[in-house]
Length: 80
View 1 (cartoon, rainbow, N blue to C red):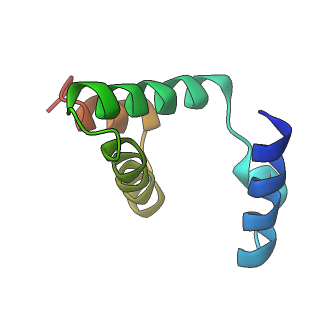
View 2 (cartoon, rainbow, N blue to C red; view 1 turned 90 degrees about the vertical axis):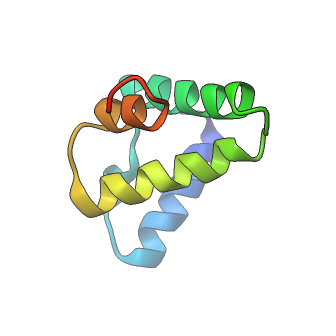
Protein backbone atom coordinates (compact mmCIF):
# COMPACT_ATOMS: atom_id res chain seq x y z
CA UNK A 1 0.00 0.00 0.00
CA UNK A 2 1.06 3.55 -0.52
CA UNK A 3 2.76 4.97 2.58
CA UNK A 4 0.03 7.60 3.06
CA UNK A 5 -2.61 4.86 3.15
CA UNK A 6 -0.53 2.80 5.58
CA UNK A 7 -0.25 5.78 7.91
CA UNK A 8 -3.99 6.44 7.70
CA UNK A 9 -4.80 2.80 8.42
CA UNK A 10 -2.49 2.85 11.45
CA UNK A 11 -4.23 5.95 12.80
CA UNK A 12 -7.62 4.31 12.36
CA UNK A 13 -6.48 1.15 14.09
CA UNK A 14 -5.07 3.14 16.98
CA UNK A 15 -8.14 5.28 17.55
CA UNK A 16 -10.48 2.26 17.67
CA UNK A 17 -8.12 0.08 19.67
CA UNK A 18 -7.28 -2.48 16.97
CA UNK A 19 -3.90 -3.75 15.89
CA UNK A 20 -2.34 -2.12 12.85
CA UNK A 21 -2.23 -5.51 11.17
CA UNK A 22 -6.03 -5.63 11.17
CA UNK A 23 -6.05 -2.85 8.57
CA UNK A 24 -3.58 -4.21 6.04
CA UNK A 25 -5.13 -4.76 2.63
CA UNK A 26 -4.12 -7.71 0.47
CA UNK A 27 -3.44 -7.12 -3.21
CA UNK A 28 -6.68 -8.98 -4.02
CA UNK A 29 -8.64 -6.65 -1.71
CA UNK A 30 -6.99 -3.61 -3.27
CA UNK A 31 -7.88 -4.87 -6.75
CA UNK A 32 -11.49 -5.59 -5.75
CA UNK A 33 -11.96 -2.19 -4.13
CA UNK A 34 -10.41 -0.33 -7.03
CA UNK A 35 -12.71 -2.19 -9.43
CA UNK A 36 -15.67 -1.32 -7.21
CA UNK A 37 -14.71 2.36 -7.28
CA UNK A 38 -14.12 2.29 -11.03
CA UNK A 39 -17.51 0.78 -11.78
CA UNK A 40 -19.32 3.03 -9.32
CA UNK A 41 -17.71 6.16 -10.74
CA UNK A 42 -17.96 5.37 -14.42
CA UNK A 43 -20.99 3.18 -14.94
CA UNK A 44 -23.26 5.10 -12.59
CA UNK A 45 -22.42 8.40 -14.22
CA UNK A 46 -21.62 9.99 -10.85
CA UNK A 47 -18.06 9.95 -9.52
CA UNK A 48 -19.31 10.63 -6.01
CA UNK A 49 -20.85 7.15 -5.98
CA UNK A 50 -17.36 5.56 -5.76
CA UNK A 51 -16.55 6.48 -2.15
CA UNK A 52 -20.15 6.07 -1.05
CA UNK A 53 -20.50 2.58 -2.48
CA UNK A 54 -17.08 1.66 -1.13
CA UNK A 55 -18.25 2.71 2.33
CA UNK A 56 -21.45 0.64 2.01
CA UNK A 57 -19.52 -2.46 0.94
CA UNK A 58 -17.11 -1.93 3.83
CA UNK A 59 -20.02 -1.54 6.21
CA UNK A 60 -21.59 -4.79 5.00
CA UNK A 61 -18.24 -6.58 5.22
CA UNK A 62 -17.56 -5.29 8.71
CA UNK A 63 -21.01 -6.21 10.00
CA UNK A 64 -21.42 -9.58 8.35
CA UNK A 65 -18.01 -10.74 7.15
CA UNK A 66 -17.94 -12.93 4.11
CA UNK A 67 -15.84 -12.69 1.02
CA UNK A 68 -15.06 -9.12 -0.03
CA UNK A 69 -14.94 -10.09 -3.71
CA UNK A 70 -18.48 -11.51 -3.46
CA UNK A 71 -19.75 -8.30 -1.87
CA UNK A 72 -18.07 -6.21 -4.55
CA UNK A 73 -19.54 -8.37 -7.30
CA UNK A 74 -22.99 -8.11 -5.72
CA UNK A 75 -22.74 -4.33 -5.36
CA UNK A 76 -21.82 -3.83 -9.02
CA UNK A 77 -24.48 -6.25 -10.23
CA UNK A 78 -22.30 -9.21 -11.19
CA UNK A 79 -23.97 -11.40 -8.57
CA UNK A 80 -27.37 -11.09 -7.05
